[in-house]
Image 1 (cartoon, rainbow, N blue to C red):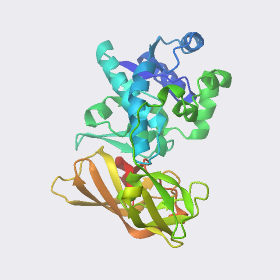
Image 2 (image 1 turned 90 degrees about the vertical axis):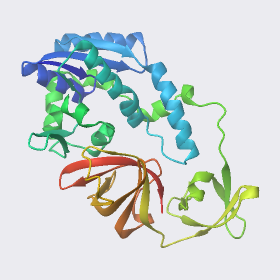
Image 3 (image 1 turned 180 degrees about the vertical axis):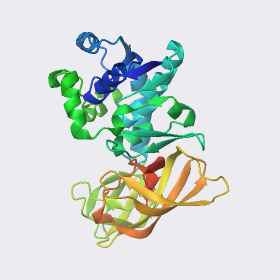
Image 4 (image 1 turned 135 degrees about the vertical axis):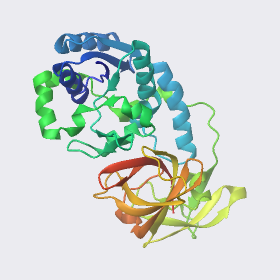
Length: 345
């Protein structure tokens, strides 16, 4: 069986290629390069020698900048997080990996995603399950893949506990090699080449009843009834009181007991689709920083948009939710789907 492995150069992708080769598969690697530097090419050749695997390096910088500029501008307008790693994987890496697999006529694709996939022949499904090595970020990077794509994937490191994975990585390649490939996604998101030109967005000046100016925020947040956190003092929560649209000013009042009762979601995607006749799905919502899934009612209301209504209101000061943040919903250990937070109410 021929397998095309996405090799970032980090420990998880290196162990993935090593494990598959050790199991007798015909392994070919592909590296999607954001830098296009000669030094990066030398590192790839070093990895080829270490793994005994041919690795093709593909420059994706221009495609990345084009897509990321658009995503960044959307995030700015919606007062949302810009998540460069998620954008890169879902909009650049995975589509190109699938395209390359077709070109090379490989049977499967693989990557160092800490996710467990389980075949369910009776239902004809590939299920995404939280395994021993699974982490939420890795699941979020796969949101957008359908059953056809999932059935082509092999993700061996998802079943390996993180402590064991670290030991295996050191056996396969010295830490100094994997460190050379580490990507600081915060810096990637601040790349000066990403700054879009000609942004047009309405911003409101935020002030209190006593006319104290607290800051500015894009109109989207207020027009959808969202709460506002002070940028320098996030523990201070405010609610909209009055709009002065002609002056682009919004008056807010501090709300010491503010709660979220629901979140509205965009870019919703299902790994396993529910019964189309169901207007409402009861499930658990999981997001970064949460210790366990929160029980919610999911209601689809417009295309790939939906709202999740919490069974119990969440105190705003106790959770770290932001516009643009990614969430998933699950049943027991199975991840059913995921989405992006559009606004919280």
